[in-house]
Every structure is written in C-alpha cells, then in structure tokens.
Length: 105
Image 1 (cartoon, helix red, strand yellow):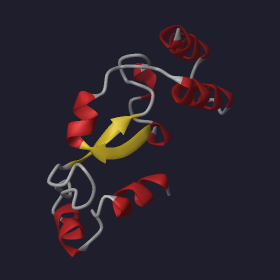
Image 2 (tube, helix red, strand yellow; image 1 turned 90 degrees about the vertical axis):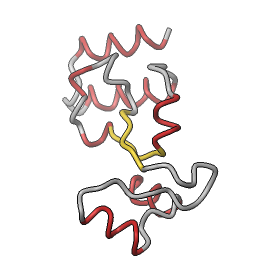
Image 3 (cartoon, helix red, strand yellow; image 1 turned 45 degrees about the vertical axis):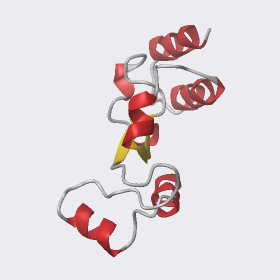
Image 4 (cartoon, helix red, strand yellow; image 1 turned 180 degrees about the vertical axis):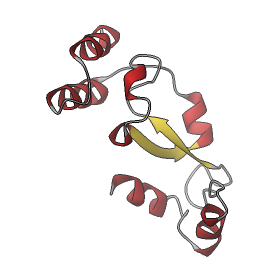
C-alpha cells in the first residue's frame, strides 16, 4: 500500500502513467520537486549491505530516479528497525541482521 500511495502522490497513476506501465515502462513523475523523472525502485535496506534482500518485495520502495541515484548505502534507524522485523519474520538471516547493525554504526 505504501508504494501505491507514493505513486499516487508523485502523479504516476494518471492515464499516461498507467499507459506507460502497461507497456512495461516506468511512469514519469508528474508532481513534486522531481517532475519529469522516471519512477524507480529503491532497496530500503541497501543491496550492497545485505544482498539476500535483493528481491524481497517488502524491501522495495518507489522513488524518483534522480533521488534514488543520489542515495548512498547509508543505514539509519529506519533500515535497522526494518532489518530486525525481517529477521524476526524469517526474511533475513542472523548474519544479514549483523551486517545491517554493523553498517548502522
């Protein structure tokens, strides 16, 4: 639901955006400071820190491409909290959790 809300707020769910998605293309951001950017998918917990979460849908979030490209592999409170939840749910190994904890320091 979060990604649907993000796409809506960025103006990507209008007729043109939906048509782009039907053709397998990323929609264009039509609202906010990133107007004109393509919508992209970001890993909340960076893939470089924990490759095992690469394809876990709960670790993916929509954002404008320019914003995504400017991000580092930083791990903050949000990522650490999510890693603990993933570990408890069995989606992240203990070694993966330790990697996230180390990156947060």
